[in-house]
Picture 1: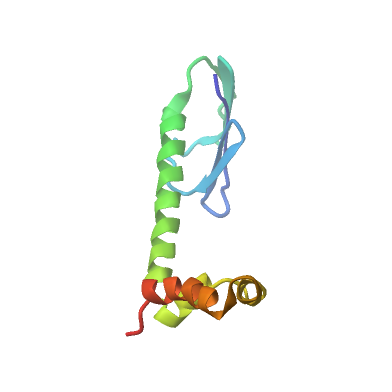
Picture 2: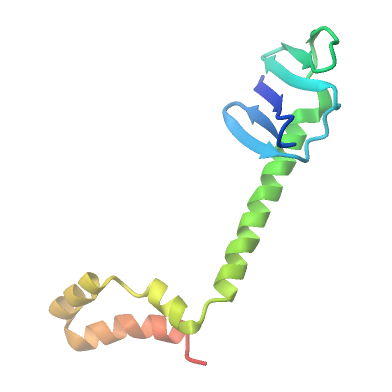
Length: 133
């Protein structure tokens, strides 16, 4: 069984959900507003409240925390992938070439070992991949 920790940060509106050491921060978790923290280890745990209600021992994982963790983790990964795709889409052909060309030291080594024609072959792959225009 998983080890789960949920902690609500009342000041920033974000919460932390950690499952087996895998940490996600989000303001999208759907947990009752009076819950401050949840600890779960193995087959039991405890809910801590922020409204004066006494802590409660639990024998089932509440609020479908594992699904919420996976959903939020996927949403974060999707947003990061979109940001990277947008960054690449906004790059010029010259930016893309510069990023993909071998380091100057490696290009000089290529010339030394394979001659200018060998180096041109290496560079042409990048030029063909990202044509001008």
